[in-house]
Amino acid sequence: MLFCIPNAIMVALYMEGRVTVCPWMDGQMWMRVGLVAPLCANKPFAMTLNQQWLPLCSAFVSSMAEDADSGLIREGKAAILQHGNEVFYNKAQVINRDLSIAVLKYFAEQREAEIASGKLNLNKRKRLDKQRQAVPISPPVEDTVKGLKVLEGLAASGLRAVRYALEVPQVGRVVAAELDEKVVEVMKKNIDVNGPEAKQKVQPLHVDTRLHMLQNPGVYDAVDLDPYGTPVQFLDSAVQCVSEGGLLMVTATDMAVLCGNNASSCWVKYGCYALHRPYMHEQALRILLACIEGHAVRYKRHIVPVLSLSVDFYIRVFVRIYTDANATKASATKLSYIYQSQGCDSFYLQPVAVERTQGKQTKFTAGTGPVVPQACVETGSGFLVGGPIWSAPIHDIDWVRGILSALEQERANYKMFEKVQGLLTAASEELQDVPLYINVHEICKTVKTFPPRADAFASAIKNAGHRVSGTHVTPLGLKTDAPWQVIWDVMRTWVRDHPGKAQDPDSYSGRLLSRPILTEVRFSHGAAGKAKAKKGGVRKYLPNPEENWGPKSRHGRRPGVGGKGRECAEVEAAGTSDGDGGDAGDGDEVGGKRGGGGVEDEEGRKRSKVGV
Image (cartoon, rainbow, N blue to C red; front, side):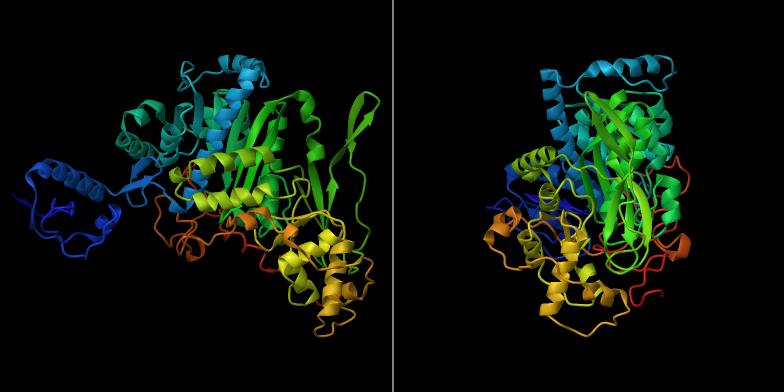
């Protein structure tokens, strides 16, 4: 039978006589079905089909042609219609979405177990319910829905909301809120594309997310905030609308602010003074956690971080929210100021408050200090003061391992499985009671020498009787409980055994190297010192899958429009919501390279000579 189809992109089954003549096809369409064919003009053609395959092939051709014409984008079990940049979509955030799906699945399982065992007391939510009755709800959230109630506060295309509905079985309702009415209309079309289950579970709302959260205190079991830029304007209402023991998921992309390129803006937004130092990406996580905790304690609530990651150009934190007036008194003990030497990499943490036990009574008092002398003991320089940052653990290791185990059992469901697996594996191996990390290459820059192997450096610290681990942030970073005297003794021994150019004795590096070595340093290491992931073949630090993998221009704006001719525009009104990622706001560039890059900050970090 002769089957002619003019002026459309076609697909034919070229198998076992089903198609006698293989037509010329659009190359991209062939790739979708796992075939390869030359690219040619879209012209009428004919193909010979067996009689019984004609209806099937016709329907398949029609479906694929429709997908191509509409610009269908598939991710996980969901699909959306792509309309240029009218609705913000960033494929680089697929890591964020895959990770969020994995965490939400694990949270749903843990929450069910906690409720069944009585470990999670939902009665504390009654106070919030009474408060809710006094507030006019518009629009109301259905209380009769079975399963988890999830709010995606800045839904944009609705892709993430649809994935939650289709890929997390315990989810009963996903409210996808957006401030832009046109975006909501596109979102509704995207929901329709995904069939009846998505239409039943996903409820699109044209509403100000902040107002909606304020009007629904304690209603949502999980809240996802993924704004374009900073999330701070949403946090106060977010910590109120999460149910008892619920999950709050927050993304921040204003890394220039959080990494200390614009420290004054960080103070204004987050209530913290950021330092631009090699540990800045973990510092960014701890600044955001401290900010969320600050909002929560105002309502007699507190946070318990379960996972906090720095990924590419953004940070992502997952915290649980609990109501406990007594626990909020300990909030200040989880915060610390940073004393950073201006002449070297040494830094010290000063707790804001301490817990003291007297008999059966526990009291919280102001922290004592300072923890540093008037001048740095290594270089004689002064100190910068940053913070306060969250200095308690940023992960729950049992959760991280549980999420990782569940992820590995469903690896086929995650497009970026290897990347997410690497992040979780690295996070699971971190020392949880050691805030921030050191960068081996930056330390070597300080003393002007080439770096030792990371495993040799780590072994020297272990041989001195201290713990050491890597960090998920950068392969050059190490976490250790060793004092700076030991760390610098390791470097002084390395420079002594590998001498280079003589240093000016009056320079910071010269003063540092001239100090006596008080630690016996041995760089030898064995197989027992290797990380479990390295033995198991898990790649923790994967390159980006393609070029230009990162932030995209703001929703509705042309590339190149905005400050300094950059693609990424300035974050505008606090209520604007674009969802699924973005880049740095406030006209700042994305905050520095991985590992610090040795960039000088506004305080003028000079290491060459004392007093310069």
